[in-house]
Length: 137
Image (cartoon, rainbow, N blue to C red; front, side):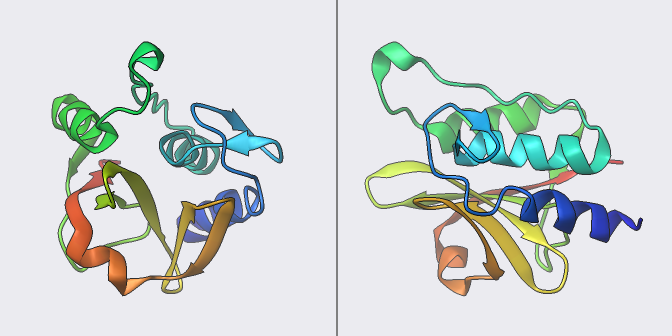
């Protein structure tokens, strides 16, 4: 199976899983940063364990925390357009800066809203982009 096919199959296997903060149980609940980790682990066997934040403080600046984590990681490098399958985009939406999407093959992306959705790349996310990261393989 090609790299693109593995990535797309891993993402599609999570479709419909409802949102649940700090969870990663296929079919039961997942949050966006854990979804990115699980897809990369399933597709490439990559040991990607993102930070969870401090539950005592409630919602946290996940984009800021994740950006710092990616910068410190030897497994990721900054990504720029044109984005490639597997690239992770950290974006700021509304008041809470805590959303991530992954670019998939075939002009698709995956993210978690009320549940995991695989669909066409949503260009409305691009002006909200704070950083983008690529797995170094």
